[in-house]
Length: 345
Image (tube, rainbow, N blue to C red; front, side):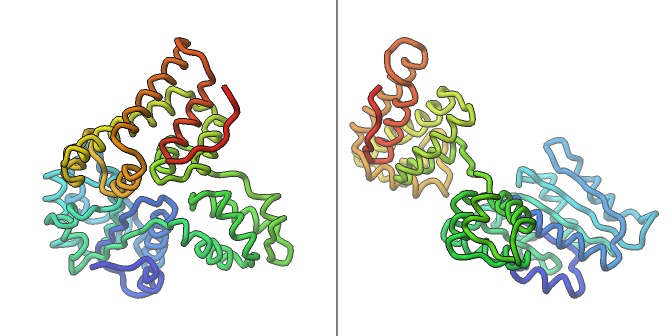
């Protein structure tokens, strides 16, 4: 059955279930949920621990054997199964179904895996994890930008700290959604706070710029029309030493998909059908971004921007004149639907 993350702490104070599943894509929240389950298990006498990592070569029989065997060192055991891919395959699905139908006595199984999408939750093994009578399924949801200040306030409060609204907003802006970075910075602030009070000046002195300047974050900002943010990320990538060909590859990849989608849509193909036929495939969570970007330009304009990307490629190869970084900035802004003043090439 499903167990909300907010209910986990209270639940763990009682009798533990035979199987726990922690599913999600946020490393910090997933780690802390698993840590809480491990701690509760230790307190209730689960003293022996075995860890299994289910990669492509994993023998699923070892999990069933571990559940069936007697412990030599403790009366109660904790088995941990890590499923990085989130896809157990046929043998893994059969093993999970068998284990969840008859969990081992005096044994707690903790399964950690990425977010299960809707199709996975409809499979037999997915239903066994999510809806099983003897399972507790903890779904971890990411903290979005609008929720981040409140998350930071709660985290500060747990650390015995209080912060002004401006200080909280500054922390949120500096860590850019990276919860692990936020948690680490709060630990540093504990050492610097005077009488538990955090001010803007305290944050400015302590918080490093932990923004995640990655090419995928850049393309998401562009697709979402966040021109100023995209420029900041582009400058961050440059500062981190990311080479222009890597950035151009990411932008060109999006442009090829957008140009093809826009062309099909202009020819009367429904957008949902165009999405389903796209190559590379478009993830469901990115379709709203793609849809938003497609409203910005015509098919002809997207094709022109793809040609602009080819010109930047020529600049990188020394076959055309001009500043590569200025070209990438212009292309990013145009893809985002805005034009900002840039220095001449």
